[in-house]
Length: 391
Figure 1 (cartoon, rainbow, N blue to C red):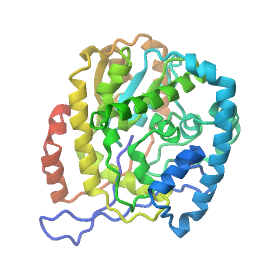
Figure 2 (cartoon, rainbow, N blue to C red; figure 1 turned 90 degrees about the vertical axis):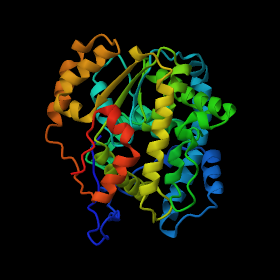
Figure 3 (cartoon, helix red, strand yellow; figure 1 turned 180 degrees about the vertical axis):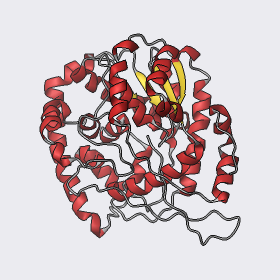
Figure 4 (cartoon, one colour; figure 1 turned 90 degrees about the horizontal axis):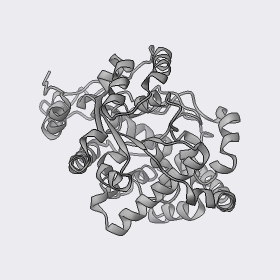
């Protein structure tokens, strides 16, 4: 994943954090499906009702298309259960690998590099955006309908496509599971408490229900792919303890990135995602939301990490991965005792070669913001070997 951020406002007073200019999303056509297009009628109706149906007039068309898709999804959900229900119920989840890390830390890059290992499956965009239908006609969409997808993601220059590795959190969301991502739908409404960044913060019943929904999604993908899974969602970072308990044979790879890049790029992420995903025209600057979620996520990560055997967890950094993708992926495999790296090395080399000219977004940052990042995230600097550099 690659950093980006808007330039800052040069008119701020000395010593104050300057307010960033609102960045613009990359082209994301109106006909490109949004994450909400995968929901069934009950899930979609509940989301609308909880937010008082406060859809901006400019977003009524989007809401209408989601409503139409929801009817189709509800019908296909029944068909999917009719034809595949027994297989889904009996599917075994074996040796999953979870890629963890804050948004914009490089989780997508690592996910795509590891997708070179054909012994594993990485949930793709059609599976994650449309979990209620993909066993029925997901392959058809994957093979013949890529013209609906833009060339790149709204927040950066990473490519998009139905077959591309994607966040399983979207699949859980479409299946009715709770997620911090529900905030994107109505960004001007009071933000829901991001409890599901930290499953220890919810009731035991809610935790089990959420884990069961993730488990259902993983079994559905397993039915189609018939392989162990490599999953990635930044939201899983604070859930490492619960995931390790539910899946005792799971392994985890955590990727870190320069905290200044992470902060600036996450600001851009939420601006652009709310622009293309929201049913309102967002007015937020996201600053405190980014600080708060980061702190909550890593407090939960540190607690959960203490209960996971060290041989099941590997730490890496974005900077090391782009400097030497072949060597760093090999080190990751060795660190968590994954065999067979030699069979994927050429795939890693080929991916690195195809993307050697990738343009990362750039950003500027005022001194006050840098100092606040140092003060509030200093444990992350120390844990991942980043200097507290005031320059």
